[in-house]
Length: 242
Length: 332
Image 1 (cartoon, rainbow over the protein chains, first blue to last red):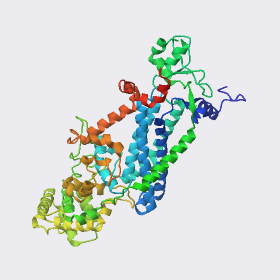
Image 2 (image 1 turned 30 degrees about the vertical axis):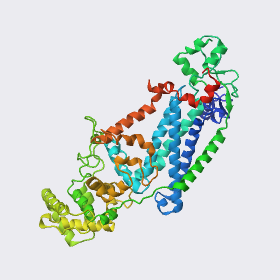
Image 3 (image 1 turned 60 degrees about the vertical axis):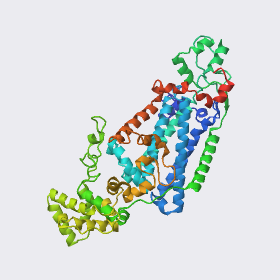
Image 4 (image 1 turned 180 degrees about the vertical axis):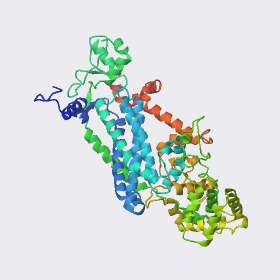
């Protein structure tokens, strides 16, 4: 029953939110132990490797942030942590690029998954800005040169009005606070959308219930996901339904 | 339902079918196990790469190091700041009302539109104010007073005269010429500024503002950068840039010092700077930004762009990705 609690009083906001949440994203979708049979390619690993790179980058960045942005110039441990940060970012960006290409060739925006694609692309673009502000925050020769060389593009486009790459303080705060928060939010929404919408079907493969009419109807996954009541593949369905 | 019926699924029906929860065959999967294995794998790769390759850390260039290595080179740039003929002095918004670096596409110039919001007067900010911050010195005080009370045309004449005296010297020469009467107070000012720069005082003075703390390096970086603009690879800064393959024509900001990978994800952005007309255009930055903004928006809204969104269907790489599925379900 919705709209009312057991004792007849109006449904609490919390209860309503929980009810809607469980409807949109039940636990078996959030933490699945089964996937469609077509999820059987190394391509699917790129997403989780991207996430892993992000986690290591955040953790190593947090250590540098804790000790301050110039710590790593004078401490061998700090330099190693900086190396961890650098290579986790390289891996993060590498696997994200592979993930993006793979999803492009899979046309992964199909089936009301456009928002999943868009949050992923937004995260990719924001990651480039995040990495760029990281390079500006290194407090070394690279930072100097990248800041000086890039200022013309920012100024020419008008972005210099709100972002000055020569302003180390601004770049650092963007890098360690604002951009990671937005990026983490985007990544979280992206992952939740993947869980809510499910993994995109192979092109031409539909899990369509056999229907007696000429119009194809859409089948729902049976509880437990056995797929016994549904047929994968439009042509298969057609044969069984004919 | 016949095969013909399914093959004739309308776009709407196909979209509904693609959006539906999968009701076909499934396989065992453990999301937590996958996440854990992924995290361990990336952790190992990160640690191995860090041990094997480390990370670059070339110290920043300081005005002190530059002016010590190239006293004449530094003074030459300082004179252009004093005469307000340097790149920073003539840059335009957001620093001043010059037009040297103002870019536009047709009649539109976002730079000009948004105006000056980080005001910079190179004569005052880079030379006169730092000199005033030095301990009292009668000769310098007299020179500054003479310079500041003279007509601007006289100031320029003095500066140009001293620039002429430097013209035949190497950037690395260690002794500034005494100057002639035609250079007025400028040689005294430059001598003091060079001493201040070599001692590290100018690095500090350019950062100082009304408060004790600062995190804004705009002024010293613009000052140092003007040496690159004026003296290119002969400058102290330019030698380092060239040696590290960081010039714009060497894929610029995408690289980093040494042999480390830098930011390869900027390859498309940086590529435009390597080809004409962008490599030679006075509006190159704005043109490239416009192109990349367009491409980024196209990528973002790809699901809604007819033609582009159909590319994966037309070039069936997806058959490789789902090879196993298509092999086991050849009808699809």
